[in-house]
Image (cartoon, rainbow, N blue to C red; front, side, top):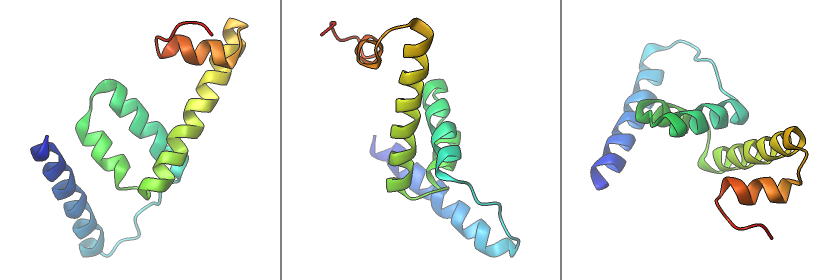
Length: 98
């Protein structure tokens, strides 16, 4: 576990160094783009993509983006299934119906 954390930080710092070394303007990513990439990378177990998305925004912004993505996904599924958001959220987490 510590090795993965160390590796993630090393990649992050390498990315920061590369950004300052090349002198080009790098495209900025917004928190929703970072959240979408992060969540999809987690679903696909793509550690490289996870590490990249983590470096795009602050941890607080990423957390907010992931939370917003979760809310929107639950609402979309609830509408699609014609169920309440609470029912859908509990089902996704494997919890018994309330």
